[in-house]
Amino acid sequence: MKGKGRRNSPQKPIHGIAPPSHLLDGLVISHLGQGLAVETPDGNIMLCQTRRRLGDVAVGDRISWSPSEDGMQGRVEEVLARSSVLVRPGYAGKNRVVAANLDRVFVVISPYPQPDWLLVDQYLAVCEYRHIPAEIIFNKIDLAENKEQAVAELNDYVRIGYPTHAVSARKGIGIAELKQSLHGHCSMFAGQSGVGKSSLTNALLPDKNLRTNEISLRSGLGRHTTTAATLYHVPEGGDLIDSPGVAVFGLADIKGQDLAWCYREFQAYMGHCRFNDCRHINDKGCAVREAVEKGEISVARHQRYLKLLDKLAQPDTLWE
Image (cartoon, rainbow, N blue to C red; front, side):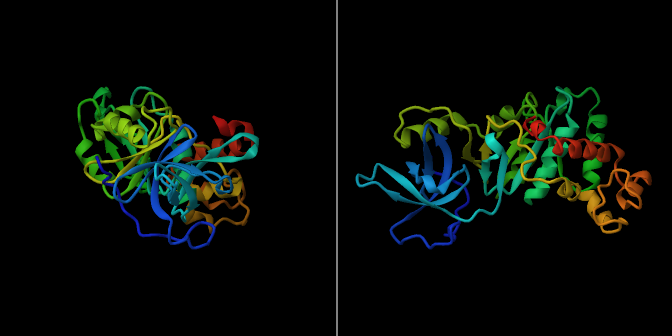
């Protein structure tokens, strides 16, 4: 099975040095043990090692690589410029790259377990900060006691421009429409445990297990090993990065003064606050607070903003 994902024209490397003409283009599709599974433009898969100086190389990265003398493996020489990067806090104050070149994140919720709206807002804030469009999936909609009421809970998000999808991976409800949203994009699912991310992935990728085995076999490892993330090509078009080991990506790099901008409905009011360093808490002349009081901004969303602001002031909680 050859890849059906987007093929991108060669780009400049991150380090600004044009790759030598003998280097080949590739797409990182998985971490396998200590190596990387790299897909070539013709759909072949090679096991590659990386130069230490390159730092993190993530699933979704477009790279330049050189083959070994026997042509059986390769080495990543350059990481090409990224259009986006998603990171999470790591140990010792260092961030870890979750995925690269994403252009869509789908935040998944369900009636059971009940939605963690603070976590939803955290995901959306990170996407705003990283300039990655986000959409919301209400999975297991068939299990909702009152479907209309469940969907109405998303009204605050619909009002500020986040596309939403009511689906059921188990029943196949809304899956065809979801595939249309995935088409032409490199996407990833995010959400709390138990909302059905794996079920959605399996519904969208009926040959997922075959593809996983193919990656291992064609990279020369014989059988699949544990992987933090894998990029799959959706049969109807588009790419999906399945990252089962990352249930939460944190507020890495976001400062307290940046968080308000990450709430997109705040942006139109922020320039009208009396003070430039307004925190939008109880500050005098705060246009955001006035909009909340007038019902122009969701009270619940503003309250969760205050909780995330407090979370940023306590670095140890960024792991949660």
